[in-house]
Length: 114
Image 1 (cartoon, rainbow, N blue to C red):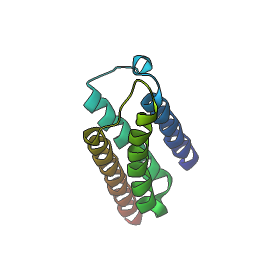
Image 2 (cartoon, rainbow, N blue to C red):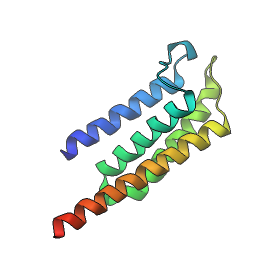
Image 3 (tube, rainbow, N blue to C red):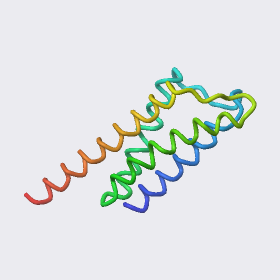
C-alpha cells in the first residue's frame, strides 16, 4: 500500500509541474483557479507525508518548496507569471495536506495500539 501511495504522490508532483509550466491554454479547468490550486497542493502534501511518515517534516518543506519553485519557474515561460498570492494559496494548502496526513497517521497508530 505504501508503494501505491508513493507512486501517487510522484504522479501528482509530475502533473503539478506539467500544469504549472505548460501554456495557459493547455491547462485544464475543472473549478475556480484558487480551488484547483488549493486542492492540488493539499493532495500533494497529503500524499507526500503519507508516503514518508517518518520524514513528514521534510515532506512539509518539500511540498511548500515545490509550490514556491514552480511559481518562480512560471517567470521563465512566455504565457505564465508567478504571483505571491498564488504561492500563498498553494503553500498553505500543502501545509494543510501534510497536517491532515499527520492527523490520519496518528489516528491509525492510536487505533492499532488498542
